[in-house]
Image (cartoon, rainbow, N blue to C red):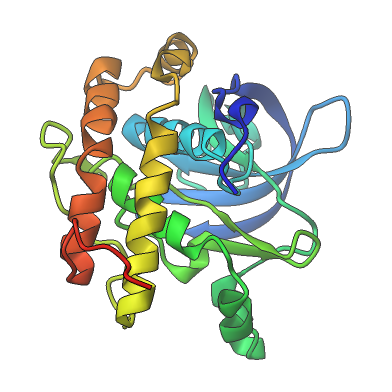
Length: 272
């Protein structure tokens, strides 16, 4: 079912501060992620990602907001004020300074990554029940997200759905470097689909879902993205017009790029 018109509205980005660090989640060469409690009126947990590159913060915020606006299951994005003196010891982000970081609200206490479910043998069943697979593939193609691995899919038994997280390498970025934003036709990996074998009927269903999703994307008001808020807090050295121009132009290229990826003609129609 297509998203309702109210879901296409870009929502403001909530801000908060960290109350306490509950657990480290991951540590990579370009990011550290922690489960934290936030200073909010009601108890709130979120995953805060500490990074050196402000482009990643922008990509996370923009893609999360756009995905939610077109009806995808993406946790609420937030900007979190981090006090470096309270960051856990051993972190390279610890220090006598404050900075803003991206965070996503915890989906649910029972949520696990699909990658984690492999150990219990539940991954195949979870993925088979996932009705938004085609939409997620099309979304990643649109925002040029090359890093949708199974650790970036979060399954919540409470919602019986999979949430999409981690868009730090979207908007044609790889290894923390911007490389393709000036080229809306840039091709990057689409890990959800690149190694999947689909029959013709499945490929045509994917093409149809991509076309429908891009129609929804054209209804999004890009001017409602909170650029002033993002730039004042994060200060990415990236012009908002470059981002919006890339995404607007790529709407009209996504179906073609995806059809080329899965080996079918863009104009081929389902005949049954």
